[in-house]
Image 1: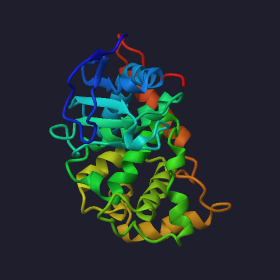
Image 2: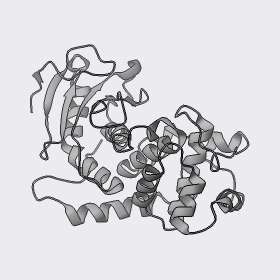
Image 3: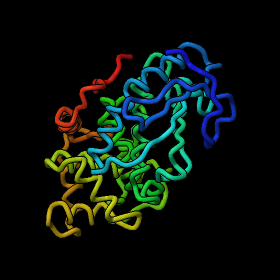
Length: 280
């Protein structure tokens, strides 16, 4: 598919000329690219277009909804072309937050899909959850599950552990920029997943609690146990690990979580478009 010049949506920061790549088969994702970056960025954008509906359907599964359509542009966010520039959008909804920017990742398009899901998941968070530590951890887990941990270099749980493992289970940090609080959330979700609690249950439970909710409250809701026991039980599990926390998935829950999502996608797979991630 050849990119065509188009004015493009109102992007949060991109001020160049966006080139339209196409719209996904479902009609829910329209992909653009900064064509001045050349063939590597265009390949990222083409791969994202091919993968977009797989990501959308996984996101629907996480949050129990099929609502919303988005525009997404691939460009050198923050000047990076390896995915480390991250992703951005204006708000955590499909009204003013549906124009998504993702960093190009030359030669590794699955990182672009991961960044896309990180922002797409936030559109389902009720407007404010994605601005706090619980929502940030959730969005990163959603991105990891749809991309085989393609953003493993963004890990924050090791930072949390090395900083003395502060308690952000009983308290929610009112920011998405603190590695300690995000890292605590990453490790806590890994632990919940290892206890056979589905990521979809975690996602929908956190959305119901909103920005003022805590992981301790989520634990109580999902397990029926006293929320006051969440932190000590979690920390007992952390102390029971062999060695330190070296990734965002210290309890090794990723494979099972990804398999559960793959099974859900197979059950709803439309005949008209592919659901396997692209190579690269």
